[in-house]
Amino acid sequence: MGGPTFQIKTIKGKHTCARSNENKLANSRYLAKRIHKIVRDNPDIKIDQLRNLMKSKCEVDVSKWKVIRAKKTAIQKIRGVDTVQYHHLWDYCKKLINFNPGSTLILRIKDDFEPPTFDKLYFSLNAIKASFLAGCRPIIGLDGCFLKTIHGGQLLAAIGRDGNDNMVPIAFAVVQFEKRENWTWFLTILLEDVGGMRENKCTFISDRWKGLVEALKELVPDFEHRYCLRHMYQNFKKKFKSLDLKELFWKAATT
Image (cartoon, rainbow, N blue to C red; front, side, top):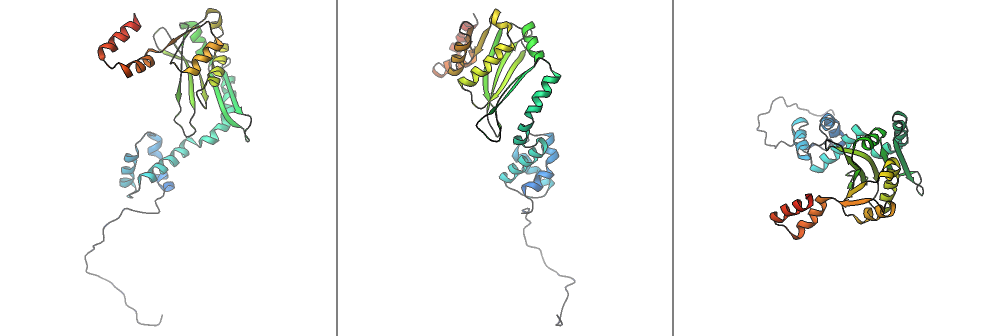
């Protein structure tokens, strides 16, 4: 202020600084906005592929973990937050029953939790139950699988087969764990849903999971229960790995 000043108008020099694509302002929230449409159109896109797209589209170099957070944020904006969606289950069940009369939807909550917390859900549409009873052989496949979500859980399923050997999904249940009590709860409702099977009886096919076997013995001790060949073979080949024995196994099973 008040002293001598100068101004640089031209400079002759060579730029020697290396170019950097790092930018701390490019956080996961910013990146989520930029990849929102990409994730919406292809939710299964790989993290490495997303990272390369960010380099070309946003001209920033970010870590793998920041890309994971950005994708998670984008998915939440597209699908909504899972914990919030659970609040809509009561309305969802009521709507389905109103528009699909005869369907069975039973929602259970944990009584000792405050606020009310989801416990399990039974789901069966009337049209599918009717088609199973009218056009399928009295054979029901039972199995459970893990739900690969942030909240985990297990999906229990009862499946039939029609005349074209296509699967008929009779009923499903979402539970926390695959245990005997949950299978008993699921099978009790299922047997009430397909009540015609109590007179004519049916055959159940399952893996050899102990809790399921015990639940069937308790509820329907006079019904046939057979084991899935694929599960049996998985145990068989642990000791007998020969391909010749594999062929003999399937020939014996299908004779």
